[in-house]
Length: 140
Image 1 (cartoon, rainbow, N blue to C red):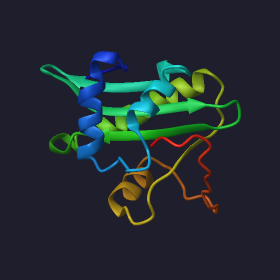
Image 2: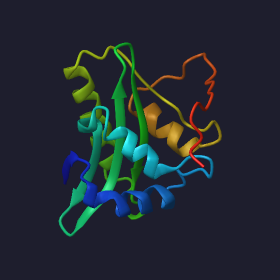
Image 3: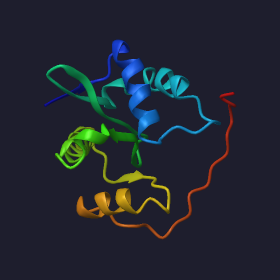
């Protein structure tokens, strides 16, 4: 398996993976998320590939000088359980450490027990906080 930065030629397969993984929401345009990411720390938008399958996993990360964040971690359904997600997260963590990031945060929907268990196994703890959001630029 190869983990590498996203390339524009990956876009259709990345979007299909995110759709199949249930990561997309109607109020959020993933194409705009990709375009925005390519303007800020594009080296932290990672793709996992296998011979003959250029996109089998993704992770989009960023560091704001205070915390690192991870979004869009996804692995092709037929390849889950083969450590692709674990390896993507390890690569993200190493890249964030390299820029001095002291802590990583991510959001998981509270009813997604399988994904919560995945992060538990990776050593992520549940913070006693509530995620708040406010859209400044509507995507749709």
